[in-house]
Image (tube, rainbow, N blue to C red; front, side):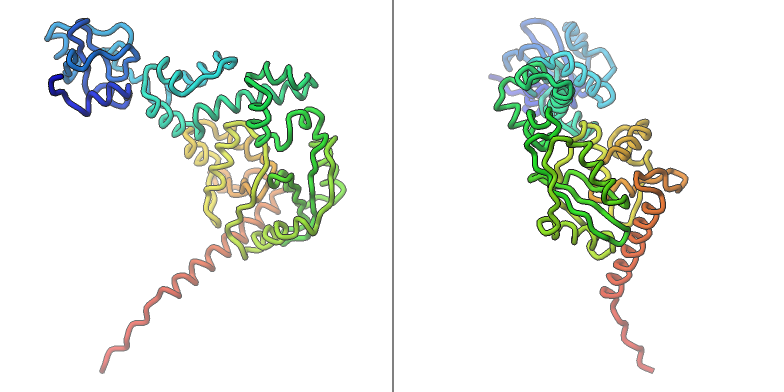
Length: 370
């Protein structure tokens, strides 16, 4: 085997779409030249020649591949074009088990580049997106009271063990229990006074599934019952005492970072928004448009607002830190006075902590000798 450019050959073997446009690969035995990401079968390395671009390859007597179209200046691997291609492929093949390798091969790019570009744009991997599609179909069928076994296969799960293994982490209970409105599930809850008023925390054995603020105790309990009409609800002030105390300390500004285990359901987009909200620093705010830009969806400000409105665990997922571009508070499920009070506490405590850090780090300069 004669010496060839190792880095270019590695890019061809990986079908690295990020190298498209930097060189083309010509094959002596076929007389064709391709993009590095071409999904066609790889040639033997001794038959490969590299050229800077299509013009040089054609002057050497090679013709363009009809499959990868190396003369097409459009880049098929940009996020703007890749995400719709991936989501469409996954939706069209929702009844099949699609691996990353299969997806990359059919789209004509390397698995690594596909995974990296898609996750950077959407916040989730192709596998996680496909799982969210399956879970959404499962929930719809279970809510229609279809038998679990039928819902399992119609939603695209290959076996009951895979269904229970994959879906329970998002449903918070077994699929059968979810279908039955939470039948068999035990949800503990506690209501306590905090610096912003009465707060209810409810949790499964996996984590917090609901936080409600400021409503009468009876209204909070009824709302929880509507969500899980067949679940067993138990008051458990003692069992949830440490979480309630941490939440109260957080709302009072004494514990800026609070990270309790969560058990909430949401779409892939909602989870992407919620993770962006959790990344907003204590004492700061972002506009709906800024959040949309941070998740790679600059035109999705309205959708970000809807994701904030459907957040089931206020404070723990800090949707109160999202405001309008003009500085207005925007919306909040528990009223703007509550939102304003929380934000004011966070700003005040964040400023106090910053001042204390500056004072602790200040160096006293010696007085000059007269």
